[in-house]
Image (cartoon, rainbow, N blue to C red; front, top):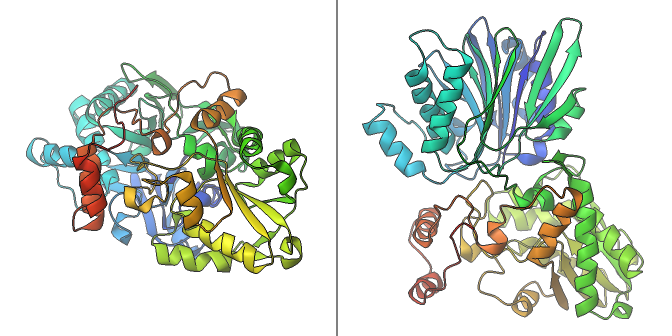
Length: 506
């Protein structure tokens, strides 16, 4: 999960890109970068940290040009090294900068092909650098000498789709030619297009979420379709083409659960509206498992669970209260690297209002339970504040399997629900009862808002990896690389007993 943005304007874009990254900061807090293009020359600055901390006045002044791309990083592949901050740059052909949101599942194979067949060198462990070099090679193959037109660019993207597997939403600049944006054939990671009409002509903005367009005064036009590429040439003419042979839309369900801002619209579905619907379906599940008269009050875990909690309380007819106050200067704990950092930050981030908990049976509503660290701390905080009983409801289903498409859920042993029953999870987080959303109900909540959405990438819930290339062996390799010392004894036993998750695409 990262935030990407690309702008083609009639005036300097450095401030626009900075402001867009602020609007996308929730998608990545590890690093930020901007690359602009002026007279076929690139200017770039990137570093680890939040957007507001990375860029100083001197950096902004150096970012000249009326076109540019930006990126805020949340590391899922590679490391947190500053060298892996994006955008990435390659000087041949023409000079290309690229920013990428997602994760490639055949990175190792591509690296081998790039080295032995394409004669290209990869300098980091980032899959984004791999993707850039694949794109650069295919553009070089498609170009007519020093000439490059939209047809050649689209031909190159079509070749990228055939070579690259996984999830990817991309913005790129080709020096002297224009800006390119494209989305993987499964449409897993979001990407949308907006325009701004000025006296000088049309300006274009491409971003991960619609909130970045609206916040900068651009009019939302549409989502970029799975497999589609758009190219805005130096004359600011927009070219569009479907570049994949069999595209299908499978948006990431976790975007709607947690990752996206509630005021965004992704693939025609309002994130806020889907979270309200999640609350309604969750209320039905709660009613079937907990006597409603045992619940005195419903409370959200700020902030992303608030819409679901409000709707759940309304449907159950139970009082809704705010029991936790959030320190907004602490980052999102889910995307903080390391269990220790997440655990420490929970109490810095949230403070309980004791009077709201004292002698009450409280139903806490969170967007999801992933590792369980935050949930356990919150339950304990509620008890310390005087709660008599603490029920815990998750607006998402149990997170059972790793996510390999750009969300940091890479190992099974990090997931509290993996290999545990709901009752065991309840004991682990020390709650009196845990209630999970059903997978079908989650998908239905999104489809209710946009009935055209039929299929979803929900592998962390249902174990179905839509790209069709994720095998148990692949997951084992990912986990071994993560741990550095192979699988845990539990996972070795599970492999021997053939208890791996289903991995075939539907």
